[in-house]
Image 1: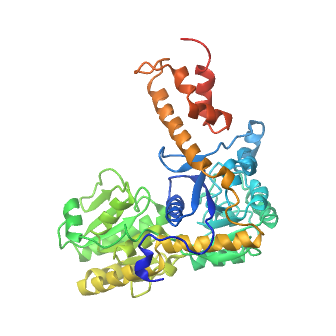
Image 2: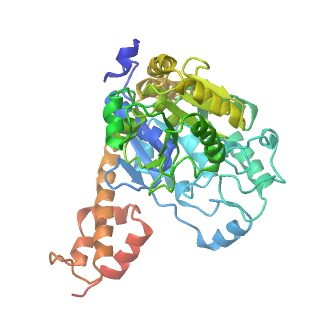
Image 3: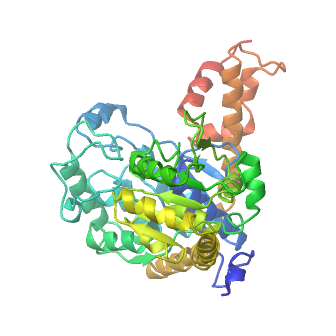
Length: 498
């Protein structure tokens, strides 16, 4: 397939149409959710039936459908006290009876942590339908943390954790030995096809708890039609930046400077060095909100991919000193916009940056080398343009979301074939996900109305009882799809009365 064909809409020609179900904690949250949403979109564009089932639906008009976690109150306090996150959840045990699960040919799992899925539910689910699991971080292979850094206990068994403050579920006690052993039992009794977005995470899969399961490298993808070079002068003008000012960016949720795991402290030190060399340097803190106390730091919120791409076009160099990352979308997005990247040599980042071609890699914590690499690019506009062209070409060739989507479809077919399944077996329940997404959109709109009007009448005169007895509310109640807050309102307002 040519590079250009990757950025054009096309249909899958590899076989029968697949019914694909993406399973994740959220519909909108971080990088894993963005990747899942993009995969769903391009798989639909390729002619497949792709749906999404989540623990929490945030955006009313997203295609995702939420299911109830169903907390078992009788054991909730004990699970919390013993450090057993999500063990009190019962809703995921019933997923094998869920219409969207019945309808699919394959389940694509993203993040299973996040307060919505009991880890033991994976056993029955994986024997009911083929499960392809994308590993977005290390959480599923450790006792609790999302990234182990220099700790190697995850390979043979956690316990006596050196740091319970790392990103991951909050634990009141050190239960990491129990959690690791439980995961070992769960995975030994599950049928799983594991996927990694970088060679680094793939090696982690093969060294730890998933070493007896099939693994495949499928690089993460971004939409290179959105993230592409554009009018840099117009982008700078929109931000009030000079055409010739050196512009460096950092990128993270809520801003790179405030994010210790994204190397905020190292970034700030490197920027201090660069400002000594370039007094007119501007730093775009992409993802941050509010005003900065420093005039040379511009906090720029990013509400959409299109807006992010527009801001990246104003940037000369992205400095990304993350201390732990699997296959960050931020790096790929910058490269696709023709922006060279300077980063620490950690995790899957070396798989993304062509050293000395599309960016530079330095050893973790080496602020001097980080600043020197950025300075080399900022000091030579010809070199900057050369790196930018190479970055764009490489991103289109390796990281387009359509290529990623095709890679997963091929892997789905492998998993389906290995389990003796056939594509297209769930037609009788097809379309149920779209209907329930519409129902839940109505529920979320009703929730907004109900919170805005505490009286028993809405401003337009419609009684709350009438609202609660609409078709989508009755269907959601029958299928157990209503959020707990809506269920309480049903109980409070569905009785007789004016």
